[in-house]
Amino acid sequence: MPHGIEVARDVMKTTSVSEVFRAGFSGTSLNQNRWDPTTSAGGALTVSGGNLTLGLGTGANEVNSVMSKETFRIPCRLQVSLNLSQRIANQDILVELVSVNPQTGVPDGLNTAAFVFNGTTATNAICRCQNDGGSNLDSSAQTILTTASQSVFEIQANLSILRFLNIAQDSVAAPTLTFVRTQSLPDPNATYKIRIRGLNGATPPASNTNIVVNYIAASEFNNVQVELTDARGPLGQGTTTIPVNVTTTPTGTSSTTVQGVVASDAVATGNPVMNGVLARTTNLTAVASGDAVSQVGTLVGVPIMKLNSIPELDWQYAATITTATTTAVQAAGGAGLKRYCTGITYQNTNATATNITVQRGTTTILLLSAPASMANPVQLSFVGTPLQTAANEALNVITSAAGNVLLNLQGFTAP
Image (spheres, rainbow, N blue to C red):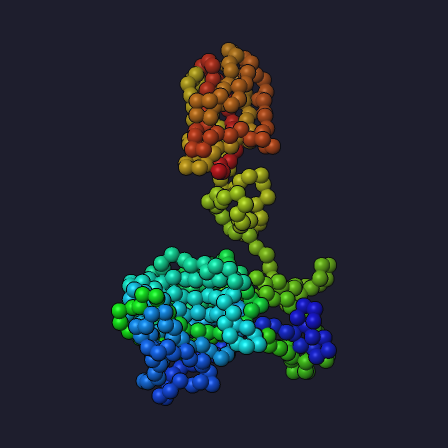
């Protein structure tokens, strides 16, 4: 199916997210058509008041869990709303996407993405991932909302990034990005289930911990078929077929390829997409090498094509130099800015010859000889390679003898 188009049926295939799983806990017992529970001798599982409560007991090495019968594929998103009655030593509690054998549905120990609640601090969690049977890759302890109160823990498993978020329950507060992982990501070709698990250590916890779960939801990206039609029926039946290639990521950052309305050298009608420039009367802040930067233009949209500078940052200088002292042609331009000289015109009308020195600060960058009583001015151009100061340094001139030197310089200011 090239470019997502099914030619035989005149349909375009696209990808959309659909919520394929959401479970609350109404009634008085766990719906075992949706869940597989594992309860140890010291553990307990109850459903009451719209919540699932999983008691972990105090037995050494005991495991208590619930796991979905529903399976998922990456990219997907998992949300679990829960609180913990306590945080205690010698106990790990996990909210996880775990890979399973697709035939048996049994966890295979190869891939996982999980929040891990361990230790005694109610505002800490570890973010864990595993790929293809490798070692678990755990973050350091990350700050979360306290597990003593109900909040939502979300795992966004994408093809190239794994995000862990924490959200206040029933609140206008924005989600908090807890951690991001780009290495050891779970295999996107594997099959996954949702599992909530409590693990007691070899040294048992001193008292029982309850995991109280309000709801569990998961979203998965599924292929759907979309048919573009107008009043005359599907594409291909008296209408114009418009192939569009669109690639999006599930996080909202999109990369889109758009085809124009007409080909080159064809008459454009309607409202074609227009390219523009950024209107400026001052320089942009200099960017780092390799960064994207806007093309600039005048206030009426004419692209700046002149060398190096926009018009408002050109400068000109004209003076008659009568003393042999340093004269500032342009003061220091400011932090990071240089003065560039693209041309100079001079004429010594005095009866005594003199030298003209152009300096950046106190450093000579151009030395000229001006004969006595010049009948005509001399003009020099440095457009290809302008004279320049250092950053935030003045551009100066000085003559070797007092007299009457007509001097004109022009240039621009830029980084």
